[in-house]
Every structure is written in structure tokens, then in C-alpha cells.
Length: 257
Image 1: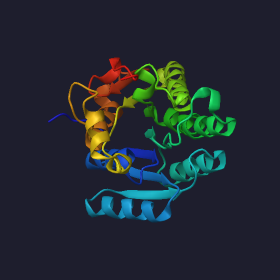
Image 2: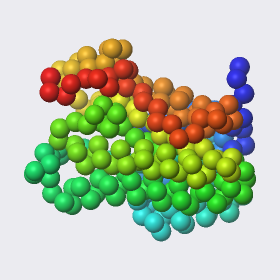
Image 3: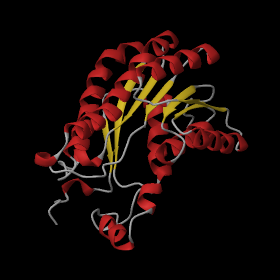
Image 4: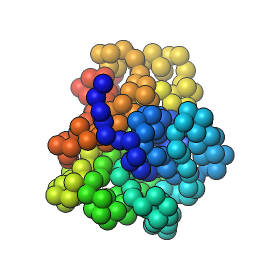
């Protein structure tokens, strides 16, 4: 069995009360990492931490909007003060794309909100944890992009695609800045993942989604978490500035079909 070197590490994950973020928390916790969840919904956060603790994971939560600078600063400072370290930062928080807008019809506030939630939160939390990772001479920053960028964009979600593209550019630059200090920064780009959002889709929509990739199914949260866990490990120390896509081979799909 591969030793991932995560026992005793402290992992901070935004938007980790459910879905992919929660799967990340489970996977990292199973490897012995202490898990700190950032969430806006207190009930969701409490339930997530309670479930993690039942499996033997050392888990805690801090509430607040991930895109709020005060929340990011306060949470990182409190976590570092409590545990004396922050080793892993997973920027997972985000919002969906409904309603969709063609560019010519898109309200400026819809554009601003998408950029704010995805790009600003990724920047803020990354910025705040760097000094603590430098002090520990170890760090892993994982940022969440999307197949909506890697797939060449999708009509109706230019704001979402732009935000996810920006995250990749940010990650690649960040990787060059932090690499000399034992810190790596990488981005992941999941396709459709089995979350609460997908569960609401009609059977027809689910079939269409599955037929859009060669694997003919959706991705499971645990599969994303497995990738994230490896990228966070000591085994992945030379993987830096990468953008890893998990879409079942869907990148060449033509959105006009």
C-alpha cells in the first residue's frame, strides 16, 4: 500500500459540507489528516463533521462565505493558531450556472457574482495559507476548475467558463511562486459529478450527459477525492502547476449537438 504521508497533516477545505468537498474530507481524513471545513450553512457543516467524527476523523468546521476576505483571514488565522500548521488548502467552494445567459443578454451582476465566488475565494484562501505553509516547508493547494473551460466553453455559461479558466491561470502562476518553498499548486477539472445537483436531473438529461463521454457515465465524488488525495500527498511532490481533467474523455464533445 502506498504511503501518502498525510497522517497528522491539517487540511482546510472550502464548501466541504456536501458533494465533492465532503468526499475530499472523507478521503483525506481516512489517510489521517485533520479536516477543517468551511461552510455557509451551519446545519450542513455540523452534520458533515458529525459523520466524519463517527468514522474516526479529527474534524472541525468554521462558518462563513468563502468569498469574504474577513472570513478567509479569520478562519486561516484561527486554524493555524489552533493546530500550529496548515498543510493542505482545497478551494472547492462554488455556485452553479443557473440561470444561463447568452453573452449579449448577461447581466453584469451575474458576471460579477460568478467571478467573485469562484476566482476571488480561490485567491483569498490561497493567499492566506501560504505563509503558514512556508513556515512548515510543506504545502498543497488544490483549486477547482471545470470541464466547461477545458471543453472549449459552453454556450450560456461564459461567466462560469471564464471564472474556471481564470482559476487555471492563477494556479499556474501560483505554482511558480510557491514551488521553491516545498509547496505545490494544482488545479482539477471535473466533469459532471454525482452530487445533489445531478440528482435533480431528469432521466433524459442524465442519459444525454452520460452519452457525452466515452466512459458513458458520470463521475463519482470519491473518484475526484482520490485524485485530490494523491495530489496532496508526499508522492506527488513533483506535480506542480498542472491542470488535471476528469471528464471521462469528453473534451472534444461539440456543444451544438
